[in-house]
Image (tube, rainbow, N blue to C red; front, side, top):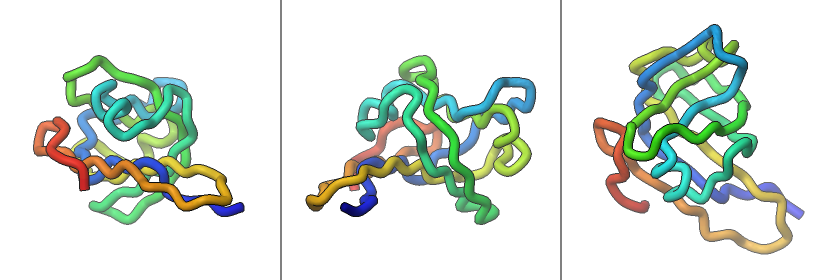
Length: 113
């Protein structure tokens, strides 16, 4: 069994960072669906801007809103305006074709990579 990349949202821009919310990352529902992520799924988030990394879980945001919000303590590590990568993994004994989503400047779906 191996942990393999299953889902990835690449080059999203953080639209909000809310220290007062109880944990998680809120992601536009359209991107959640395109990447094959689940609500409350554990994800690894890395900042392209700073190199910071953290684990949290997904909350679905309003479809088409472009929201990418770091909530709670995560907002200390990754700030509004930073570009990030969001990755979901799967434990499996078989190869997986990951869904890799590239987003545009307003966090809209651009294309699959």
